[in-house]
Amino acid sequence: MSYEYERVVTPSSGLRLHLNENTAGCSPAVIAALRGLTRQQAAFYPDYDEATDAAAARLGVTADRLLLTNGLDEGILATAVAAHRGSADSEAIVVLPAFDMYAACSDAAGGQVVEVPPPADLSFPLDRVLAAIGPRTRLVWLTTPNNPTGHSIPRDEIVRIASAAPQAIVFVDEAYADFAPATLLSDPVLDTLPNIVVGRTFAKAYGLAALRAGALVANPATLALLRRIVPPYSVNVCAALALPAACADTAYYEWYLGQVARSKALIYATLDRLGVGHWKSDANFVLARFRGDTARIVSALAARGMFVRDRSGDTGCAGCIRMTAGVFDDTRALAAALEEVLCGEA
Image 1: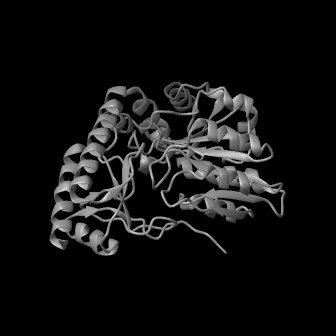
Image 2: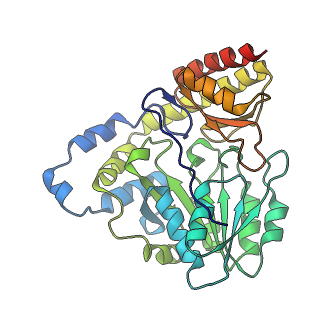
Image 3: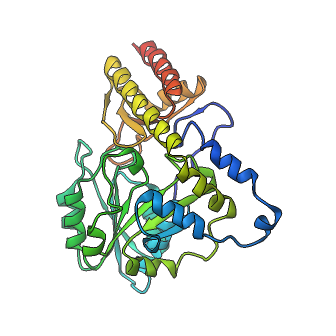
């Protein structure tokens, strides 16, 4: 079986609530920094010291524990290469439902993908993951908060998995951790269990998705294995200039997190009123299980300029749609559109 990323149609206009993007855009300070780009900076290979220091300080780690990547996707690919190279029968555990890139990158790197299905309530299947770990396990992909459920994995469960698989890299994808109550970034477990690698992105809370800015955080010795794989100038100069500005504008960051929290509360209230089941989320989106045809609901919302993601094809997610929680005014528009579409079904 081969795996690949499911490419999603990107609308040219309308409200994009289907890719978990920052619906407010980046900080104005980022645009100011990009306007200062000189001809020489565009012509020369970028230096990453300032961007690395800014990102490390913002994430609360030392610079020797952080590696900038071209979006978190590059970090995911580099981790797959590091885990699977030199082994013809290595395995990667993917806990479903999951980001497509985990299986795609492990498959491309020569690993065999071992899928762990979720229980009916989509809670994290710790016992199933532990049972899947074997002598050929070289990589375990974990996401906290999970995409698309929004569930966080308890720290102790991550520790149990990393302890059970010392021969494997345990990749903890924290792409949505800015919106969550916990992170492993400065946790001593990164030294006591150096097989843990944490992935972060500046695409979501900081609004830099198009600039492709991500980072890997790990014990320095572990990170050294990944530095050998990531190309020397893969992060472009625009991302290098944007990162210090984005990290410094903490007021904008906190404002957007507040917008997301208010938006999730409104989505929950709207879905409750409409009788639609859903999961509480630690991320910037909400997954809901609809009774009607999901394709029809997605299409009806698109006709109103609202683009959400049909996740009904994911394991365990039959009837599910995921919607971004961003700027509160956008969410009010979404709530009104949901009322129209679902009340029209009744």
